[in-house]
Length: 368
Image 1 (cartoon, rainbow, N blue to C red):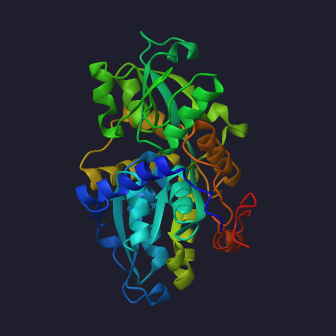
Image 2 (spheres, rainbow, N blue to C red):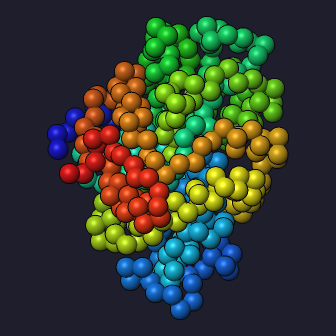
Image 3 (cartoon, helix red, strand yellow):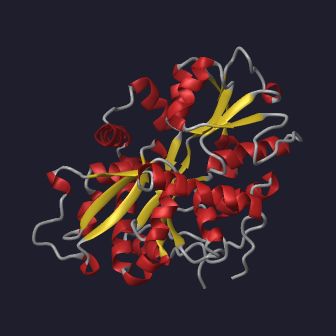
C-alpha cells in the first residue's frame, strides 16, 4: 500500500499526541469494571478460548452504544465465559496507541483518529468493523458576540483537539466559507483554539473562547451556560447522517479471534436495537454508566437535548468517512490518504444477516 498519508510536519505533531497521553496516564485511559452481573457468565464457553476481551470507549454520549452495552450487560452476555474488560479513554490518539501496542482489542472511536491511525501505519494496524453513532455535534456560540454565521469570522472557536473529528469539520467549514486558517497553529480569519472538552465550559465562562464546535454533551453544557446553537453539523450532510463513532479492532486480533469480534458486533447490534426501541431507558443507562465511570452523572437539562441529537446506527456510513478524509485534505491536515482496506464489514454483515437486519456497505474502501 502506498505511503500517501500525513505530511511530514503534521505527522510529527500527530505522532506526539499519543506519546504525551501515554506519559501522562497510561494511554490516557482508566480501567473500569462492571457490577457482578457483568462478570464472565459462569459455566459458559469462552469465545475463541479467550479469558478476556479488552474494550475501549470514551466517556461521551456519542459513545452511547458502548456505555449502554456495558451497563446493560449486552457485551458481557455476548462474550459468555470470556470476560469483557473496559478502558475509558480521554482522546482518540491515546486509544489508537493502545490498539497499536496490543493493550486494547476493540474500541469505539471517531473517524479522524481512525483515519490517522490507519494512514500512519500504512494500513497495517486497524480495521473499522462497524458503525455506532451519527450526529451529536454542534457549533455553539456566545449570542452576545455571534448572532449569524458570518459573525464567526474574527472570533475564537474551540475544538476538542488538534486533528480530531470536530477540528477537521470546523476547519473545512471555515475553508468552504472562503476564510483562511493555518491548520497547524489555528491562527487566521478564525482563531481555532484546541481545548479539552472538560475545560471548554470554563473557557466559555471566562470569555477566553467565543464558541465551540464540539460533540455532545459538551455542546449542551455550553447551552446550559447561556450559549446558543448556531449550527448543527447534521445540517451539512445529506440525509443529516454522518459518522461520529465507529468500532475498530486491531488487525491482529481480527485475524486471530474472529469469533470474539463477531460476538462484540452482535452485542453492538443488539444494544443499538434496544436503544432505538427504548430511548428513555437507554438514556438513563448511558447516564448511569457515565456516573459509574467518572463519578458524576449528567443533569437532565444537559442529558435530554444531548441524547436527542444523536442517532445510533450499525451502519459505519463509510461514504461520509471518505468525505471527512477529503475535508482533512482540503483543510491542510492531510495529504490525500490511501484508505483502501480500512473497512472490513464482512463480520458485521454476517451478524446482521443472522439477525434479519439489512447489511451495510464499505463505499469501496473494504478489504478485497
